Amino acid sequence: MSATTPSSPEKVNVGRRLFLGLTALGAAGVVFGADAQNFVGKTFGSGFAALLPGGDRFRIYSITGSYPSIKPKQFRLKVSGLVNQPATFTLADLQAMPSLDMVKTFQCVTGWRVPDVPWRGVPLSHLLKSAGIRPGAGAISFDSYDHADSESLTIEQAHLADVIVAYEMYRAPITREHGGPVRLLVPQMYGYKSLKWLSGIRVVDRVQPGYWELNGYPVNGWLDGTTGATNPHPQLS
Image (cartoon, rainbow, N blue to C red; front, side):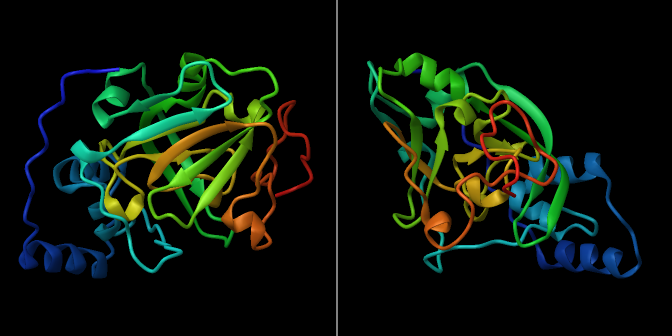
């Protein structure tokens, strides 16, 4: 697929005075609402919202100890496996597809949570429909540009309406530390299921446990209280 590549946003130099000013406001007990966070995210990038008092408060994890650096124009997402039409998409391709905007709480299995995070991306179900799933497919495996992390979902889970291939967060391009330029988002499950630095979507015959599942986390990482017909093991959390 092809599309006109949108112009890249200009890099904004965040000065020391601005940083110290925000820190001082935090010490004074000033809390920024969602509108202010969204403005700062759009202006300075999604990662900068973490500097705001009352901001996102994400804890940034990396299996490898560093973050892969993928320039937006060099990004490629490969869809392969048990599909009729394997494809490779650029970031511009994804941005030209039907998108979904939603505000969701991000919940980590270790206990911290970030409420009301705005996201935008392509429904995973749209990509799977475009590829055409072949008979015998039972799960989706996801690969990361860090060449260490991986994840999986059943076919049913992958078709949940709010599972997206996300390219915006806080109404700004997803930053490197948050898994940009493109990451998976599975809002009904714990954060480790939302793979960062997404590089590949492989349709396979059965669930292949990802990195965190191989290290003791549940394969079905449903949030507490989340149930439904698509959850085969609602007792897991």
